[in-house]
Image 1 (cartoon, chains in turn green, orange):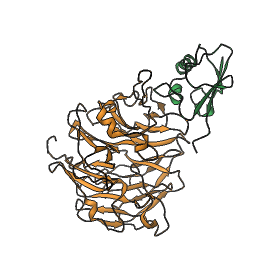
Image 2: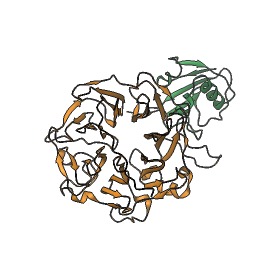
Image 3: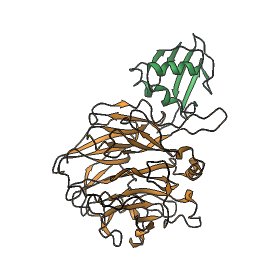
Image 4: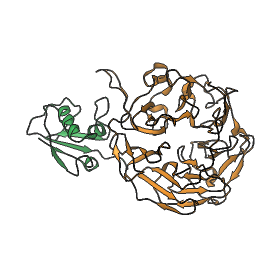
Length: 86
Length: 389
């Protein structure tokens, strides 16, 4: 599956806006991503395993509320920085 | 309280000075020459990041740690070992422990304060966060762990309060101080939550709020109501502390064990509310504050739009206004708690960063001020980097 990376996180992915990943849940996908791009997970997921306040994650266009959301190999995951910050 | 031996006052520094500047939109380094007359501003580092604190490691004068986040992304610490030329992110930034399913755990919103450890402990750093937490690294800032028991202690958690009990930007643990005579003698302060001291390396802590006032109508016996803004320890006499508090300016001589409100000697029309507190590196009787308007809704600007520092050379018995060089009127800025500092030269250099993005300096102990840089983003912190003693 592919994961869309928002611009604030592309310093971790060497500028790539879309990267491949695998896993059977959103949590596994993020662990895989963090292994490849160390530090990226903590910038979007808290130490309590919740999605940070101004981050949204969509699986095939559906907003994920938690990390246990199951994913399939051909799913598309979007990580989005919500409108905030100023 | 540990021994009362006096620390040796360091000799004045003679090398060049740099200012490490944290802003709401990135970090900057302003490098001066040996005379402190010529200054050169770097290009922004981590442009767009909210940089709460940027601090040089005085033990090697090369390593800089940066407490950063962005509007969207979580908090982290960046680390440079070549004075800001290249940076690496901490492998394990400060974070609270994960709690079991069903329990309400805390998550660090931002790292607010960084303090290098004792000179005898290279690699040790302390960090204060919002929500309030105390963390330590023993590998130069690469990995961080909760320090001491306070983050999970029921009594401390009660004093720390919730996100609703702090500033609009969240309650903050700050002013982590190390006794230069003893690495096990530590202090920290919480806004709100009082001032705390350990003489055994953080195994146990004692609250030191005797003499501090709280907002009128509240009970000073409740530690949660104490709001220290900035606490400083005299390097030239580590048994003396100064404090700018939400409710005034204070000094404590540890032999007395009680805070004295030295701000009562400030002019009544200015008051003694503010954020920063700066101490002379060699004279324990000399300190500076930068008052702000703490009336009505707390405008947090210079009183009357007329910025001025105030200095005491008598350990708080008298204060002198220092406004030469600052705008005479209509300057509606102020200085945050980490944004005013002193160098170790003779005469002492003073530096401050404003909420309007200006850096001001005085190389005459505050008797006159000049603007070194303007048009920066809102300034959160200014720290001196003595590049050579």
